[in-house]
Image (cartoon, rainbow over all chains, first blue to last red; front, side):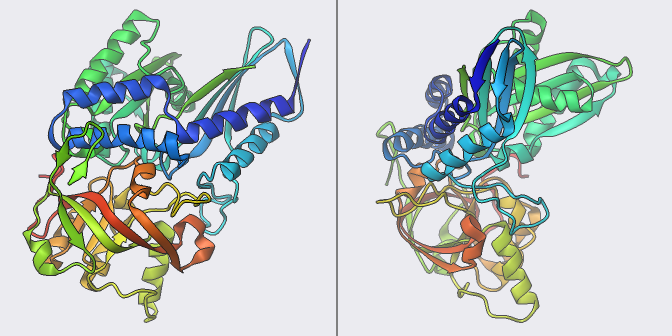
Length: 279
Length: 187
């Protein structure tokens, strides 16, 4: 059985959290640059500002956004490997070091109802574990900002609402959010399963490389239709109006009960600072 | 003039703090502005403290008259920089507090996203404005900040009230003094 030291996990998390703080993934940056060309007026100025901000962040090593998020990790752990140590601890050590060394903002409260309980090192991270084939560990890291997370929702739809009902509910959520979640967005959708499964899938959908369509043709078509409907709202960059309300929609489906149509909508701001590594 | 990434420019109106009501009355939703002078950061926790202070008859840590509150909790300042990343946070969370502060003389707030009808009405009523800066542009906006000083509540960390000295800080008028809004979602 392949042995993996917890220090290896800590180091990987450290590197990813630091990079995420200052640099956008290439597909996100490219999509923002493309969007500039489609817009005029304030929408164009906003997108140009976002693109320029990414360049300034990379040069100055100032964080892309002062909201450096709460760190969310999806760890896909091969069942033929053995981790020597505690996963949560290994992740948190990497997060704490990166947020200290990178001058990233610490935004985590130990007690949600106590404003004076900041943990001081942006830990703990939210860690989701999935057992998979093989002897590798795949780590996805996403610093999740409060603004876009606050505009997310889980709704238990009635099955009769169907495909159009799903699209309408997502559009409603995006309109309700307006400029608050920092559009242009990436919309993560979890459809089916149970209430908590849908929520988890909506976050997992955001771990996919931005703009990559679902491998399932039906789901990919649904993604295209949602994207078109969301961009037809005219909400635009930062809610100031425009064609570009979302850069991409990612949908993950799961089988569900005959009585249910769980729908989770996880909004991701344009600062989609996701990182991925395989150990 | 605000120079953008593509070298294009959008004419911006210069505002100097403390803000004059007469100047604010000339602004219209959608106008681009650049603020120079002093602005104060305050977000969720600081607002709770300020309102508690007012309720108990205490004196605020700074005079609100003609001043600007920036909804911002900056990232830590790296060595050699004036401030860390410092973009706007979402404004609606401060909606319950803004009308009361405007009634006490607050001239402008800066944040992101649309707000309650009560805030828009408070702007109209008190001749104040709501400005939006580009969310997620904290590294770029930090370039407009030349000095920072903590004014109150240092124990709140990023949520402490800070006095920022700014030069040509770019923003867009979202709610003007006449009841207009820049957001297409507002009717």
